[in-house]
Length: 220
Figure (tube, rainbow, N blue to C red):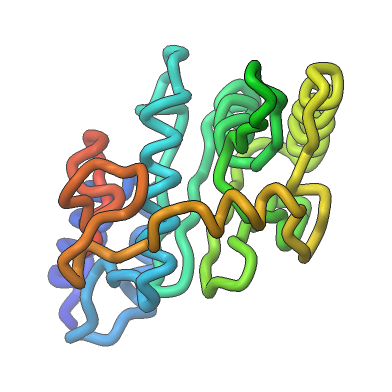
């Protein structure tokens, strides 16, 4: 590609993801000339996870942030989606909506809040990676400091315990008994690409981040 073509593609990438221009230029430089600027998820499970994350973001982010939903920019690849969060406050709200916990309900039937089966796969000085048990999925959260991630997770676990619940994500690489039953009771998860919709998501959801923010991800 010519310099002008690379520059144009970098501007387009930055427009749709919100990424800083320097990052957009690095991404474009690493792409083959005929490669899509923003690749679609390689696995249906990844597409479905992104749809559920979007649903949780729209449902839980009620505070006002500088960037849409407290997300500075996103970085999509075929195998993962990275969310760069703008602040500790946006991290606290997002983790509360994502990490699964079992909470007691009136009537004797407990309920799972968050994304069932989601686990912290890795922690680093730059954030954490979340994956769903038994599925080829990846969601990376970055932005706040390592200490901010530690504090947000510990605070959430403490709140769940105080309310008589169970922090399911702390079970590690195993389903809790209630999560397993909850998962078995759900409708089969079907990608809209194959003619169905995800359980619990708006009908026709095929591009998780398409048209949801001023800088959407066009997952085709």
